[in-house]
Image (cartoon, rainbow, N blue to C red; front, top):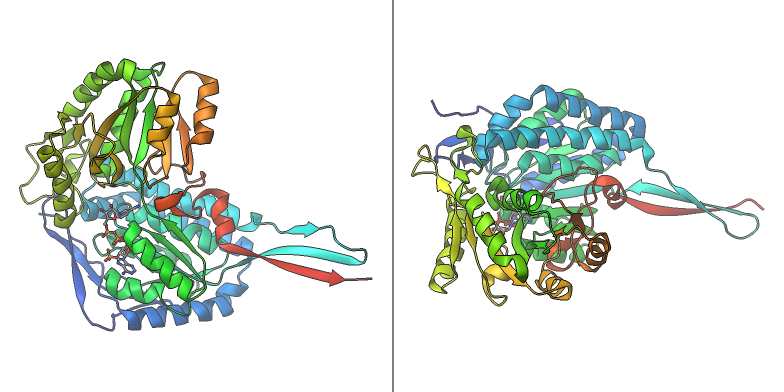
Length: 484
Ligand code: NDP
């Protein structure tokens, strides 16, 4: 019997589970085989209106008066509730997204960790004082933004729930969340858990539905004080335009074409498994996937042969088989990735390694064989466009300057990995890479709740995760007291 859930297709507004104004539902499809896993509400502008109004009442009311200590306790309690439901949430996540169960389990742990981390951080957002004129006392108080709107993608629904709401709630904002219609069942369940642990009405509001309906209504809503968006650069541009129209700030996290730089003195035994994992994890559908590997020319042949052997050994199959890689999220995404691979074939880009499809992989599933291609010319789309699938391109470089030129040579700038045993070079290169995170002899696709995360250029702006997110979700107010 295929897994199904009876989570109701309802929105969560003002502390109640309510029918969407449209009275319509959207079916959720399992990417491993195409079966219907469950349904979500098809929310629209009317539901968003109600959710924003509820958030405003909460911010001006009970939630706004909740102390930092109590907010921290609520977040910590939610972290514990998530841990207590880890297996249930992981099953939901794996069936909804197609990701291997072991990845879904670790995603749920990371979700809990967001609430533990920000639960501990809630009462540690301190203000400041500034020396000023004689007879004056100046205080800088960090205040919440107010009502915050959150639009997130389908690649890590549970984790994204923690990432986008953790810091916002810790700092006292009242939130309205619009997750992606492709996968968000774990978010419905997480919202139920948040209600059970006692978040007051209106602190968290959930409206599911399509981006053009519920998403656009949220991002353009005049009652929103701050927007957080993760997704494609194209929609990110629309979000920023809406934010500009309403004169509100936004944080945008828009993906990347993240490079791993492998120098001739690298420890290849350490580097190569990480290089492969950074592109097959979540079937390459990670904003910080390591999708380009830049290899110094003197070791190019050796590295390519070793990477090819590793790629050929990658096994792809349904989530329940718990292999190295699952399917991509949807038919649309499958066609998009297949389109990149077909154009590369027509352009004569050599395929140098390819994962194996497991016999349990249903024909109705959205499977893509992880693929290693190279050498890829710098002017080919595969060298600069985000594929968002398990496609790794190899590009040779001559020396450090050449490596930096290629690494910084796309419109993106999210994260990078640098593999070299030369300590001086590690720091030199790290400082010159125009990205938000640099890993030296390691790589963390999507990892590290404690680590500030965000991009440059087309990868977006603003920072999430770590204490930086607590700053994003607060704003400085200057209070000048004349006591002379
Ligand atoms: P989108 O940017 O379309 O989706 C991200 C979120 O934005 C979803 O919740 C979506 O809703 C919502 N949205 C869509 N249109 C609007 C709109 N007009 N106004 C407000 N919100 C909107 O990404 P896709 O899912 O279409 O994926 C396309 C490509 O984007 C991928 O192939 C990948 O390259 C990139 N991407 C990058 C991600 C990252 O983490 N950096 C994550 C996801 C995608 P809904 O989906 O429900 O319609």
